Length: 75
Image (cartoon, rainbow, N blue to C red; front, side, top):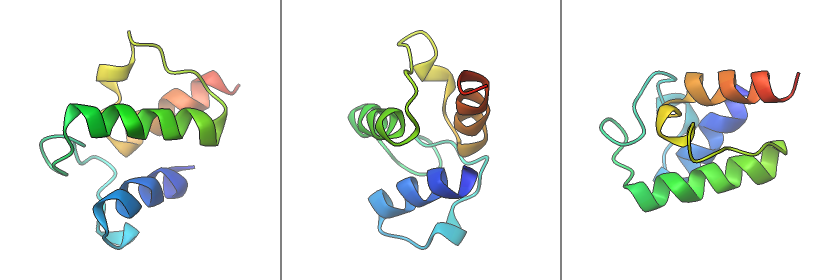
């Protein structure tokens, strides 16, 4: 799952997935703006079949947090 999340971010950045640190903050470290983050979360919802509430969205700032959230929601 972390690999797929990393691929989503890497594709949007146009970089190799191996260059994405799983703890890198999507805004401060990777440079995504709030609109791009919202689009990424929508893509994650579609790809993984989960719903990300507005309440939790701000907490999903790196691959590790996203994967943990998806794991929790798909149990």
